[in-house]
Image 1 (cartoon, rainbow, N blue to C red):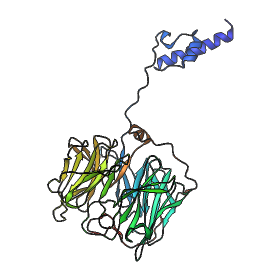
Image 2 (cartoon, rainbow, N blue to C red):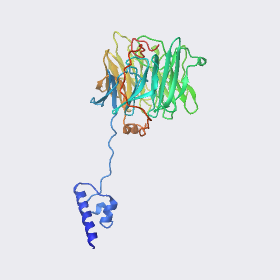
Image 3 (tube, rainbow, N blue to C red):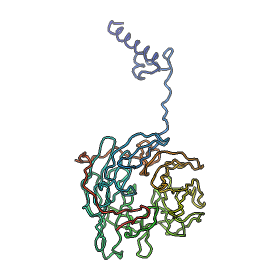
Image 4 (cartoon, rainbow, N blue to C red):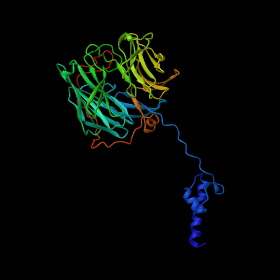
Length: 431
């Protein structure tokens, strides 16, 4: 054996000894070359490494809004971080949204008119300047689950309502008006547009939303559902708006957009098959004066919703779950005084429920067996799902898209605006 050969055999012998002492293994090709093609198992004292195993995906986090901050909680109630929420007036669907690990919201400087959409991450705050509304306009929005697209609405209130629905890439490119008010569409002048949800295939669900109503309304809802196709610019009515019967009484869509949950008044909650138009109505339970906050499980098979007495002097609420189609819902949680204002499924067996007991809002984790644990304070905004969680649920988040020249800024103050409070009990929904 030549001196150089002996030198390299000595080096490899040391590496093999170190690897066995540390409980690890060298690449098979290197070991094979060093010991004449022997496998790892044939090395004296060595064992083949066990195959790698994947642990469970990380649990989603819960985002709430309280004061001037967003709070990010673990499901066990541990506070993980806080992020700025300056300028957010009243958090509800279409004014605050959690997407992936980002939080988007309308900064209207504490008013409900004017404003701009901001994106908040653990790294800072970005402003989406192209969404900015005039001082006396209203602004709502929705971001796609892959954070590649955004839709937003501007509505101007005067003698009537003039409303526009815009869509664009998340960096503001390719922006265009998708739908706008048109006297020829047969809708009354008091309907405004709101974007509801981007679908996986790229279509957008939006609503013509009734305005100018008020009273003791506990739950936020939409007045109608339409599906817009950016590919051909066509809009298809799913639950069309009508002048006579278009209260904000539709509360949720199944993940595939095949079913909608809603119901106003004494008839209670129901579900509509959007392909056939057929509907079922669930039995009304005791102490059910209002209903809302419907949400579907990730598979779309299960649905949860909230009911309340509708009595501001003696409020009480329940969470009901319809486990499978064809079954009646059953209550799994109750609250008195107070009511459950929003529900979001974590997985097929758990959900988070935001509730209000007067001036205090908080969030609990609910299990289908009725067990319940507190998570934290604040108004429920959404679930923060890392990519691993989304993939486990079949949603899948691609890597972050390019955002052009979006500028990281500090949130500026612009003074007070007129009140325009949607979904807030005892206040006007719009107008």
